[in-house]
Each structure stands twice: as structure tokens, then as C-alpha cells.
Length: 272
Ligand SMILES: Nc1ncnc2c1ncn2[C@@H]1O[C@H](COP(=O)(O)OP(=O)(O)OP(=O)(O)O)[C@@H](O)[C@H]1O
Ligand SMILES: [Mg+2]
Image 1 (cartoon, rainbow, N blue to C red):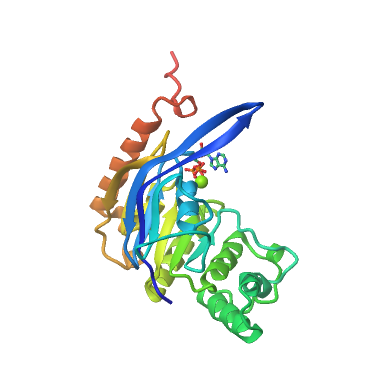
Image 2 (image 1 turned 120 degrees about the horizontal axis):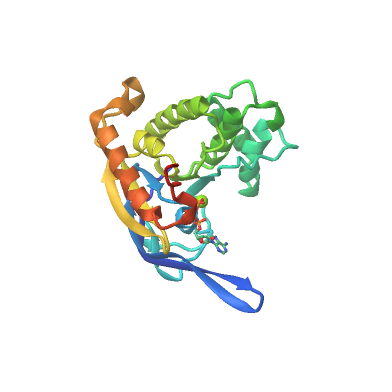
């Protein structure tokens, strides 16, 4: 597995909605530059609609930038390729396929030989702790287990980059913390690059080497903070560390400023 370097250079993206006959453009991203080094864990945070998913889709090659460049190992990136695996918030498992066949599905599309598919599915299901569930169907698994299948499915492609779009948002708080530890462990053992979108500042600070704050309308990089907490972070109470608390307060304040003018985030006036 080679772990590529990803670079966005002055990337912009506008979507064109149609309202009746009128073109209503939505400028999702403007002039975004970001460099992700091989093996790094980068978290993207920012208010809803600021372009985080769009950024991941550009990195994956699912979308093309209007301006600027997406570079993988220094060369322009066109079309989805095997360099990146995607993990979604809604697990997107095929309900009629077993756990193992779900993990094998993208490998079938890649036309990997049967034996290799089987071997990879088994290897990555073991890595995410699902040994013994190969023949279960998704509906028989808990949410956390279903997302482990989603993770194994992405890892089985042996990508250098894992792009994760709010993968733990649908999980209960406890399962979510377990999954954060699991993911940190897997990331450390495989040495791949992860770009992880979350709305949770706690999650971003627990997982990330850096946290990139994206601001809305149009989306752009507002700030990048380094998280200087030693790893493994599950071996001590990282969330109680003073630097964690400081960074959390700082990012929260920045996000509050960003959404202050949006009605859905306005606080009601105190009664009386
Ligand atoms: N395929 C599309 N067609 C039209 N507009 C789109 C499309 N995808 C995204 N947009 C618009 O681009 C903007 C950014 O969307 P995006 O989904 O990237 O935001 P986000 O930060 O991931 O939001 P959330 O936190 O709610 O997931 C939004 O205004 C959205 O409506
Ligand atoms: Mg999104």
C-alpha cells in the first residue's frame, strides 16, 4: 500500500441548482488550499453546509473542481481511483448480502480474484473486530457493528487514504467513543492517511493531528490547529488535558462567531 500526499491548491466549486428556469448557483467552496502529509490524521470541522462533504468528494475524484487543482502525489487528480476509500455516515450496506459479501462487493467491481477477495474480507473483518460475523446480515448487527463493516469494506480496498464523512454520527455516545479508539488503533497500525469530517469538536480533537476549521458561504479554510496531545490518546484521559479543553473552547468560539447571523443557531432571549 502506498500512502500518497494530497494537496488542494486554490480549489473552488460552485453547484448549479435550478429554480424553475432560473439557474441558482451555490458557491460551495472558494479558494481552498490544504496539504495533507502521508500518514496524517486530519479532521475537518465547520457549520452545516460549509462544504466539508464537497471537499472529501473532490479528494476522492468523485467531483471535479471548477478552479484550482487537486493533486495526488503532485499530479492532477481525475476520476475516482483506488487511492482512496470512502466511509459514509449512513453505512450504505447492501441488506441482501452477508457481512463478508458486503466487504467483498467493491473488490468484485475491481475484479479481484475470488481467493484474494475472500482473504482480504477476512483480514479486514478481523481487524475491525468482526471475526465470527462474516455470515450475518446487516440487519442483525448493531449500528456500531454495521459501521465496522463499512470501515472494513473501505479498508479492504487497501487505499492509501481513507475519507470519512461523519462516520460515527449515527452511533450512540458510548459506541462512538469505542469506535474512535478502534479507528485510532487501526490508523496507527496501517499507517494510512485519514481525512475525517465531523461535527463533534471532541471527536476531532481526540482523533486528529490537525483540525481544519472550514467557514461557510462560501466554504474556505478559516484556521488550522495542531493537536499536540501525545498518542495513544486512549491510554490516558486526553479529553481532560488542559490543551484539549483550551482548543475545544477556542474552536467552539470560532464556530459560534461564524453562525451568529444564522437564524437556526440564534439563542432565544431570556424570558422576563
Ligand atoms: N450535488 C449538489 N448539487 C447542488 N448543491 C450541492 C450539491 N452538493 C452540495 N451542494 C451545496 O453545497 C454546499 C456545501 O454542501 P456540503 O454537503 O459539502 O456541506 P457540508 O459541510 O458537508 O454540510 P453538512 O455538515 O450538513 O454535511 C451546500 O450549500 C449544499 O447545498
Ligand atoms: Mg456533509
